[in-house]
Image 1: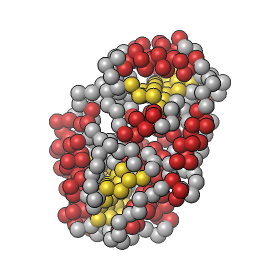
Image 2: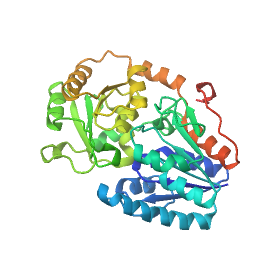
Image 3: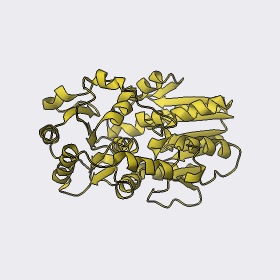
Image 4: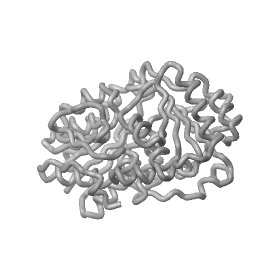
Length: 355
């Protein structure tokens, strides 16, 4: 089969990279196209994934429409030459539009309920929309749900084993209490009007006072007074660091969920709640989300208490999660192969998880 994978964000590289390898091993022809993004392209190169960049990165919300139009036009031209059986993406606006124009099949994966612009533009054109079972929106007959999270496509233990060498690269010792702080840029279309921390400096100070060594990672440039905490490790090693951290405190839902499925407690500070962050909080106690107006202060109290106490059964909670949630790479491969053959993908269950 001929399969096109489209990449518009660093997280999309992680999500699809194992599936790309699996599909190629099964004899399929996989073409990867991306929009320019320094981190996404660095990840594609770091994982040695052949790819072609079709358009630049939008530097503002105002330029997003123009960049998207250029990207779709170039993707259509390249896809017409390839004649794909199926096109896939996360969000999938361009993928669904191009597949419709070429009468190919499209499979869209998504887990972000509040990204209504993307869903309104993409969902009506998609053939199959795969979402975690905890996704809060009912999409209709196109929807296929699975018991898992995007992060389990690349952080399931069948797919990932953390490398302790990352600690030396980060300049920390294994016996230190490590706190990773993640700051968001708030420039995505679905982030408008929302926020996280009141004062990032206070977050760092509170964690240090509790006894943690703080490592900062930020989308874009960090605040000037926190530049000394900025982490300088290759982006493909970030998950290794999350696995060895003692706590992750941040504004980004993806990073919070990544830490949680690795068994590292995460404190998620954001005015937005998602189906998967709520489930990781309520069902597994591996993520603690703070969304209301006093989220900053309450989150810092929780983060400090986690650092100061070391008697929570994080590993046991993760083991339960892994028995109840699937390896999502298997979901991706099955959905693409089945849809390309003109059939509806099966609804996976935890019992089908080979891990």
